[in-house]
Image 1: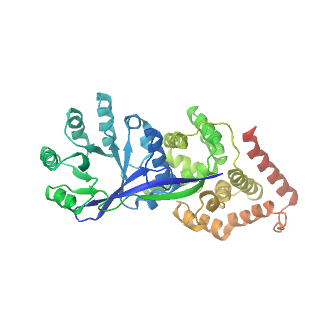
Image 2 (image 1 turned 180 degrees about the vertical axis):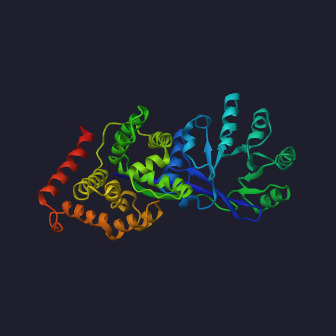
Image 3 (image 1 turned 90 degrees about the horizontal axis):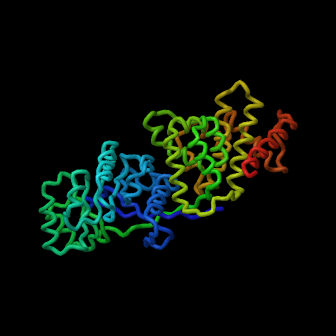
Length: 403
């Protein structure tokens, strides 16, 4: 039901050894080594772990994040899910330089992305073609002797961007590179990569494919909202991703529909595809996850209670599902509930409902929790027949996805 996700992170510093960025690295275990069989899977896993599982605030803070990108992903619209102000796309040395690729790189720069060339050891025809389109050139010290390094730096004298020396392992290498005018540095002399990890509930491949099918068929937002409610972990992902958009608009999110509108259908579709890539799953048959089912059931009970008890309160009806789902967020992501809730772009009254049981939604949450525990009496003032009907309808709704 759970799996542990890993992410490598290595600091990049300036000439004063002040942190300016991190390179984000694929890791499949706590062992601090990369075992990459598929570049696309590795990169999508890095993106998922950094921007969804762990969260960009925890991983990068206010620094940049370098992400290795193959030619396949460079040409794919999946990159549009990334915040261009936080990411440097690192063009792998294996990328084949073609006219379509150069056009795509120019497009990515127009969108606001920074680009870096990885493992540069000479300015051959391909590197020269890329040079006008990149902001950062990463020089591979291991592959160069002193004479070659001096010559390469001289050849790059007119380059207006940043030169970054990678694989700097000694103080002598650092001092030499600094004397040559190189501005940024990365290597064991400063810090080895560290491995970040988090435990998450496994997403339902079946639910993700159903969501993608709806997106591809131009289903309306209500249909998308219903599909998302059957995948509470994906709802939480959207809430996390909404943080950036919400900060830009200064508009908190109070429902799944609002998250859809704030992010936009195109970005949701790309994130859904990326999650499927990152899972590297070969079996897409329905696999029931009791925790995700409980979160979906709790949210649906909240929603039905709000409709029955507060039909005139549209704000309560629209936020009810999200409050029910968020009441299990600490179990879903294996982090303290208060920390997760504080990081989400929702109004204070909704946070208080989840954390303190306050307001109308907090009261409905207490009623919902009482339905899950036969030993807990139902709060006074609620018709037992209504409660039984609501609970039955919610269970039927969740079970219907597995038929």
